[in-house]
Length: 498
Image (cartoon, rainbow, N blue to C red; front, top):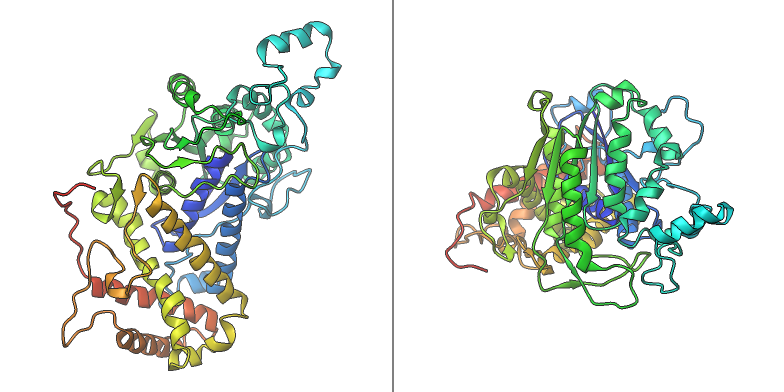
């Protein structure tokens, strides 16, 4: 089953970033699932988007080397696919019927060739006088850069103006990326999911236009009949004051209310997920777009990514004729969240895998470089390969500069998600439970990890002669041993509030 995942605007990119982390950790997905991420944004230089693109490419590079995608290997009794298990495949790498134009292999295919102003997009100079005057009534044409709409440069997105974005997205059907998508969508088991914000410009404009297009009678029957879902992200952060910015956060709530009313009657999907949060005290920079727009990761984005996985895991029988709506709740409304704050479905599907991946990350980034003289490291030639082999450098880059940063950003945000303390020792890495030690059992000591790594690597040599594949299996098994040492977690919240 393929899940065509449309991520619209900056929110789409930030949620894709969190989804990539959850998939790297081994969150539960159907065994035959392939996710096709398609980012739709006019702002091709957006910092959040660029970061998400790098992480997807690292994920794909690691996965290509760690596993062999053959029927024989997937059915192997020895291979365990946990980390990086689910394929992420760009739309342009699929076969598409009657494709007139190649779109490349980027997750961010070019939406349009237009790089000028909204006025130029509408070809106002070619209109007659009556039409031009009408546009001046509909759109702000003042010289003030923070309010002028016709003069808006579309290369950095719509700056919180869905009235502009909806006009641009109205041409989506004629774009090369959408035509390629329709040519590639041929399997009746495939599904479609859309990520968007409800309070910005790109997401709130593109989402209803895309859904309307997907359901139009002119679309091929496989697309019209496909199971379709979406996550709509409501306001969850506040912006710094910036009189030079065209983005007005005071309009976030009014735009949200208007959009919700429209969605209720006009947007028909099999499953629609809503998520948002009361903004905390930490303010985001008020940046209109471009490379400087790199917002810190937020737990809302992680839980929006969880909605994608929930939709993918639902069997067809759970979808009926009536629309289904889903919201997200926590056990308690604390400003700092830890593992006990989440109910069973989230804990088992997302957080247990994150615990294991956090252990694997700490093992690879902290333990392995300090133990290159051990037998397991020598057998894998790690002293020579860690800094030169593309697989290991990609894995180190992903874990150190992306996964750790993602966790740190969420831990420092407001609302915070702070389940792990990776700089701490192994026994204290999971904040909600310290591994007990005694004279006879030192928990996750260096000796324990060396012994386990040696034993595991020995058992993997025959079934996995390729060192990179063997090392991935070693990481999976070491993480499992660490999780066993941690033991059962108390998931009851304490009386103290945070």
